[in-house]
Amino acid sequence: MSENPLEPLLKTLDSISRCVQTHLSRVFVAPQNASPKPTLLRPLLSFSPTPVAPDSTTSPIKEKKAAPLTKEELGRATWTLLHSIAAQYPDHPTRQQKRDVKELMAIISRLYPCKECADHFKEVLKANPVQAGSQAEFSQWLCHVHNVVNRSLGKVIFPCQRVNARWGKLDCKDRSCDLEGTVDIKTLTSHT
Ligand SMILES: Cc1cc2nc3c(=O)[nH]c(=O)nc-3n(C[C@H](O)[C@H](O)[C@H](O)COP(=O)(O)OP(=O)(O)OC[C@H]3O[C@@H](n4cnc5c(N)ncnc54)[C@H](O)[C@@H]3O)c2cc1C
Image 1: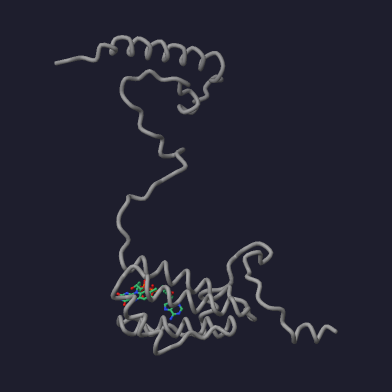
Image 2 (image 1 turned 180 degrees about the horizontal axis):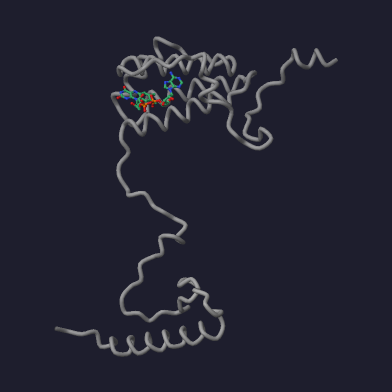
C-alpha cells in the first residue's frame, strides 16, 4: 500500500499544534472549573491530514440541493411576481405603465417557460384583454385571469374581493417601494 510521504511530517505538526493549543488554553482561556467552547480552542492552523468538515452551526450559507424547478414551483413564483406588481401598481398609472403591463402579459404569453401554459395563457388573454387603468382594476383583472387558469386546472376559485388582503403592498420602509404614477388631478384641485 502506498503511503503519503508527507504523512509523518503532518502527524508531527498536528501533535505540536495540539500541544500548543492545550498549553495556551490552560494559560489564557480556561478559568477554574469552566468548560470553554471547543470552537474557541480550535487551533488557528490545523495540520490534520484528514479534511475537516465545515461547521454547520456557524456556516452562513446553507445551499439547497440543486434540482430543476417543477411547473408548479415556477407557477407559484410567477403568480407571486404578477400579484406583487398588481399590488404595487399605482392608482393613477402613467400611459407608459399601462403600456408596460400589457406588454408584460403579452411577453409572458410568448416566453413563459412552459409551452402548454404559455399557449393556454394566450387564449386567456384573447378572451380577457388586460385592464390596467388603476391599481384596483389591474389587481381584479389579474385575480380573474388567475381564476380562469385555476378553473382549467380544477383548482379552487379565489375570492377576488380578498385579493388585497392576500397580496398587499410590499413591506418596505416609508413606502419606498411604491411606484410613482401620475399626479391625481382631483387631489391637487381639492388642496387649492
Ligand atoms: C401565466 C400562467 C399560466 C399557467 N398555465 C398553466 C397551465 O396551463 N397548466 C399548468 O399545469 N399550470 C399552469 N400554470 C401554473 C399554475 O397556475 C399554478 O401556479 C401551479 O399549478 C401551482 O398551483 P398552486 O395551487 O400552488 O397555486 P397558484 O395557482 O400558483 O397560486 C399561488 C397562490 O396565489 C393565491 N391565489 C390563487 N388564486 C388566486 C387568484 N385568482 N388571485 C389572487 N391570488 C390567488 C393563493 O394564495 C395561492 O396559494 C400557469 C402559471 C402561470 C403564471
